[in-house]
Image 1 (spheres, rainbow, N blue to C red):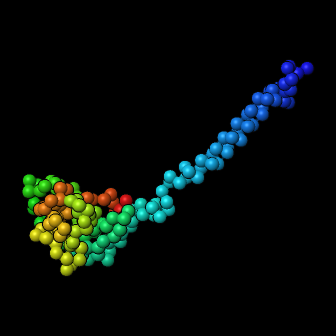
Image 2 (image 1 turned 180 degrees about the vertical axis):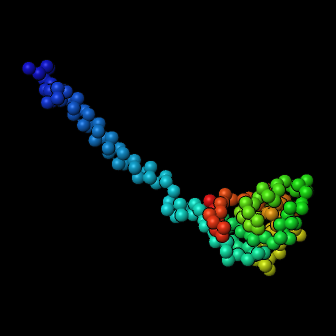
Image 3 (image 1 turned 90 degrees about the vertical axis):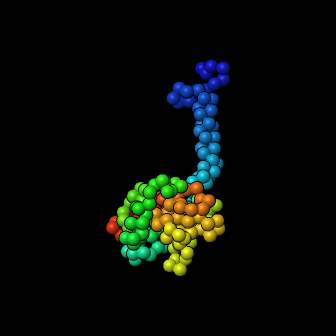
Length: 181
């Protein structure tokens, strides 16, 4: 005989407990089904993930030439420096620099220099990528907005910019290819 009107299910669990368990399970599944689109919307979009890294073929870049590629919406300057540019960058005493950093700390392999092409003063894009662009007195890049001049290693040499051009994370995937990001 059932105690105070509660019938038991076949496993010996009171029927009311079984119904509470089933109701709670359906509620949890429903909350999960409603919450999933919101949680999934917090993930980066496919177009953002596609820009997370950029591959650059260095083979077509001649010595002394520079190219600009985009990575995460930022211009990346890739320059194949001449022996004279490398020598000039390494000859600079660190105490002459606003943001002291050796040339060797800014590169992974000679002659390649890879920097984010955004002036560290107000976020302008410096000139110096095209052969006809003014490169400033140090042969690197020149930001005409406020007169910041960078050397052939992307280090700030004059003007209001406080820091060197940033070096993005990159790695050589072969002798003639790099992956930025």
